Image (cartoon, rainbow, N blue to C red):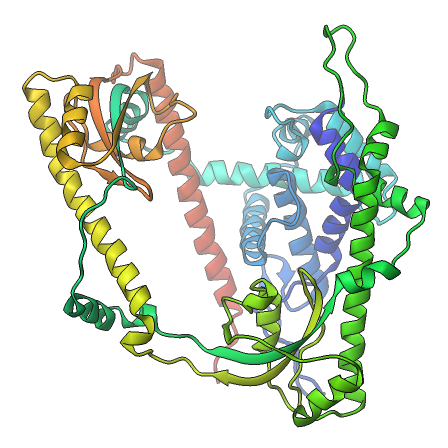
Length: 559
């Protein structure tokens, strides 16, 4: 069975190597460097030396960033998800570690060390986190046929350097130091066995009587003026090119329909299948039946897509005609009339909420807010759900503080929601007190919650959670519940944790602490984990300091 990672390499191999190649051949613009002047022969390039690299030279930048990019992507198992500034920081630290490795005479990595390192790389791991030999073999085979110059020796060299860099990290970080008290704290947090019950107060069922006075609303309006400010709005008209009007003129061949389906099979439903009577004779996929079932939808989708393209072309032709004829803003209506088009009005819209008539199109809003510029009062063709449009700018209304009467409805809604939530928080304090009182009187948590719900006039649901630890918590665990555990002892009820749609109370039915002595195997494991983290952080901090010191040596002096 072909694993997921194999399919990934097979389908995305060209993309992978394109990114790797880009990391090698594209120069990165270093913000820490100084670039040479243009047009003055007496100005010399300012050299910026960094542990064997001259950051002023493009080839050194490429070498530094290219190796770091390959290293990071092999370790992370993905491409294109590293921010440039993060990659640059990693490249500097890696170069510093390798410089130290040379100074400390750390020998070259052996083949055995490189092999062990490869098995830890995410790039060559299955979804279960295990090394996938087939995926690695496929990667090597593809390297041999790679026409772009990246070779297996390049990968081996980078991995070999990474092994040496890790040895430097371990030497700097040392064994890591951790106090027994820190181990006990973390072990208690992760391995304490909890048995809890929860009560969820439904926010939607909370319906306090709220009757704000004009004085309440006016005060709220003045105190929260920023939230009611009307942002800048564009006033514009538009010429519409509906895709539906071009649909009758679109024709497609059977070959085009089939090719479109083959390129987008997941977008269309499959033919219905009959469930087999037993697993020994499973139903096989029938591509022909799937295509036949989806064909009408495929053809309709393809035609509509082509109609959209025709609409977009017509909109682009209009903008070109306006430009070539140098149509002034005052003459646009007459010009459109000659083309049997009409400029339709749009209600004023903001940058964040596009024209309502165009489905709130963010593209239309973005283009409109670029206007006016120079003599340009019209946008380029903008694709919208119905086809394409061209917008004609009239004016941009500046941001302003509205009169209270203009936004009274929104002020009332915001005040009401804010007051409801404030009272809900206050209600939580009351409910907690009622729960604690009923529990002391001998009620079960469910009985106490039922009584509290009746008294508070809010719907409360209870749930008992099976014993768990934070190390092995339930997959469907409510994170609000987990966050409340740090402050709970057996028999206590937490404060209400307020969420978007509920308030949650957690009752600790039982709390069993783990063995916190060194006889517990988990104590040693936890100590090693904390020590490893501490060592890693110390090493990173030390290397970062060296990076800054080295960069400062060649920092251009201010004149």
